[in-house]
Length: 478
Ligand code: AMP
Ligand code: ZN
Image (cartoon, rainbow, N blue to C red; front, side, top):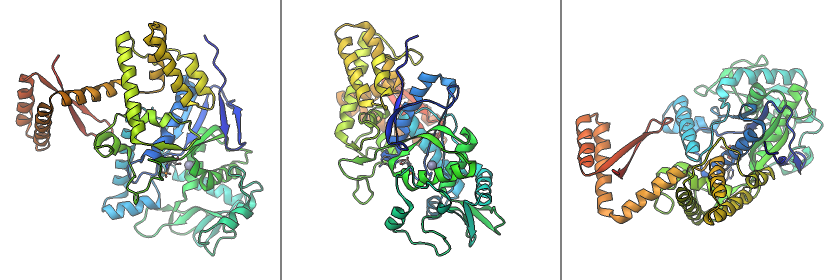
């Protein structure tokens, strides 16, 4: 058994790159803040998912697949959800279920493994209420006008994670301050619900229904699934303050612990073509649009190429997501795929990944260095080194790149380039067949499929388990 390099991670809490030592090697525990489910995930939301998926894979390799618990929540109670459901005229439940399924499908397409637990906030309301009661009983929270507020003055080192003092925060605060707050920085644990808004019977003897604040959701779900303290807490750098600072305050003050998570990891922000992504600039892209709609560059992109672009930059650095980078990533994956096909090797997920790959990942998830290691293996494989070819295949499998999908897309593109008229005709017949199926005209749908089969063209249907949609691709019969 080769000796594993030791893992080092940059901890926001200590501002240092430190050796990672889990509390319990038999159960390494990680929490990452998940999506608020009211709309498609954008490419920035995909960054923490892919980054922490690589860390999850690495931890499973270092400690054993059964010795890592990864929790990524789904926030399904939030004001943005209420507003969107009202705007669309759908029920909150329909909106959150649909959006959560889309999120899962998109993240699978990017090669992300499912976390060990994916808890929903609405299934943990009792845990949140219990935590709020504990905070009030301990003098860390108070009731005011139907709200429960966390009292930041009750915690001596509030602000430690983000490195801000309460005085700095007050000076910098631009928020409108509710008159019932003792201190402008006090934050909401529970608030009253208006009629028509989701609500649950309130804690602390408050009359009427209410709903939790965002921060308490994560504190309660983390405690339920990982315990009062755990190893790693992750998310985007925008969450350090106030979300993570407030999670720390709630968890430490209710459990009486010195830390919530011992290691805090934050990914840098992603921009698109050098600019902050925004709807008004027209550069806002969802993962779904990249995968399924011809939005960027007038074409769709394989999930593995998107994943590779997200990993070409080390997670702490800002990342510029560009069409050029996607093209390069796709080209690189195609080259690797062809090289592996020529070498006659396939990736093994259960094999020991190459040492240089592990060394790079153990160095604070240095994915650019990991990709450089893959280039080195590819060079050696091209020179006839069979072990390097196998190492490259294993490294690609370990990092979660789906080369089969990259190949299928490039073959379809080649077929189209070779005979664009045929491609257009087949696509039109596929659309007719889909319409027939939607109208439950199975006879017509089968007739189209059989007519194409008679010409040597095979249709392949794949059903997306999460969304139930069927996608049809075609190829020439071998
Ligand atoms: P939200 O749904 O806004 O809470 O975001 C979900 C996750 O995506 C959080 O971890 C955010 O920090 C992260 N995130 C949002 N926008 C970006 C971005 N542009 N770049 C990187 N991460 C982001
Ligand atoms: Zn959170």
